[in-house]
Image 1 (cartoon, rainbow, N blue to C red):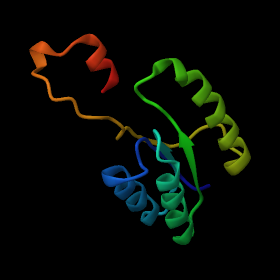
Image 2 (image 1 turned 135 degrees about the vertical axis):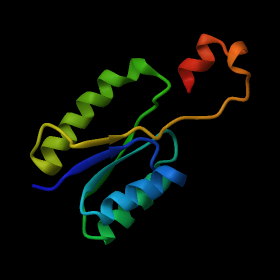
Image 3 (image 1 turned 30 degrees about the vertical axis):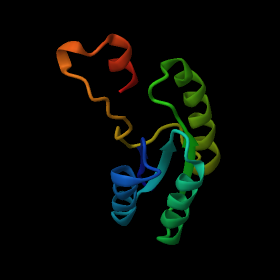
Image 4 (image 1 turned 90 degrees about the vertical axis):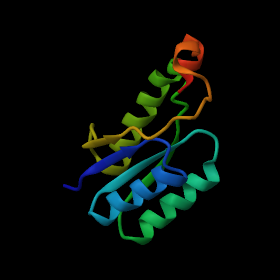
Length: 113
């Protein structure tokens, strides 16, 4: 059974490179993206070109209210693509920058990071 990694924020940059590196180590990857579906699909194509399985899923990590829906979609993908109910590794790469001193950061700013 192949290993499956979920890499948040993996449609570009460090997350993309992490997803491809994991693929080169022999694992399949679930790529998540916030708003750049086309970039995420390119990463999926790169992973598949390396002989592994991959799927792109939209996820806004700054909006926790969307997590239950993501979990349901993730369960369906795991069952359909891998005939499994779980993945093996999580790389939580998603995030964004906010230029504010720590002591002045509001709770709302912190929650979106």
